[in-house]
Structures are given as structure tokens and as C-alpha cells.
Length: 172
Image (cartoon, rainbow, N blue to C red; front, side, top):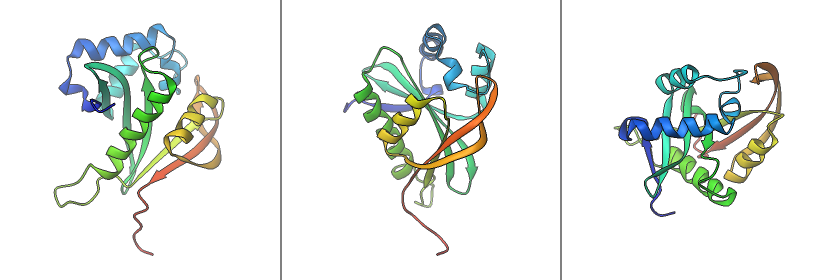
């Protein structure tokens, strides 16, 4: 896992990025990644790529996963993940996900040296038990259920609320 790189889509061959999303589409996984859509299209993926901080996890010159951050407030971002369905076993996906979170929380710094991100949150539809278990294994703390806080397959649903933080507090 030493050769794991986390890069923006602009740093990769556009054909590799397109191929990654095509594989997710062919395995019917886009509906879990873009859960507010009933049947996500390539246009939905394109909009997501243009409006979020999207990063790719590259291992041995292959895109093995993607995560994006949506700014919420202060130094808090919502984290989203997807993984290539055949490139990594679950144990390696958890390790890669953990590395991505640690990079965002502990490595990314502003010009003044302060952290760019201090809290990552996840809102996962309660129906997506596999994603909830994955987030917990990556290191997110399960806070509880928020009613009507997420969409899943185009329908409003409850969401599991999970948090990962640096423990850096201000104003206490």
C-alpha cells in the first residue's frame, strides 16, 4: 500500500477517469454513489466532478477508488467514497479509505500552516448497511440516525450520521 497516491482528476489521464466511472455504471454502483438520483447518468457524474473536490486513489497506476469532499461549514466537510468493484478486497478498501481520511485531516494545510479540514462527516442512507459498516471500519464514529436527512434511489430517507475529527477544538 506504500504506492498509494491521492490525486485530483486533473492530474490523471481523462480516459482513465472516464473508464473508472464506466465500470461503476456497468456494475450498477452509481446509484449508491449518487444516491439522490434514481438512475444516475453520465451528466450527473459530470456535474459532480465539476462542483466538488474530487480525488482519486491510485495504486500501481490504477484508479482503485474515489472520494470527494463537500464543504459544509468552518473546517467541516462531508466525505463521499466509491471504489472500483474488482480492484481491491474489502480489507484493502478500508485501509485505503482510512489513508484518504488521515491525509485530509492531518496533512492538508493552508498557507499559514493551519489545517484545512478538521472534521469529516458522513450521512449515509440507513438502507446502505454496507456503506455504514465501511465508514465505521475506516474510523468514523456513529453518532445516530437523522430523520429525513438523505435521499436513496430518489426517495427521502433517514440517514446514519457519522463523524471523524482531529480533536482540534476552538472556543471551549
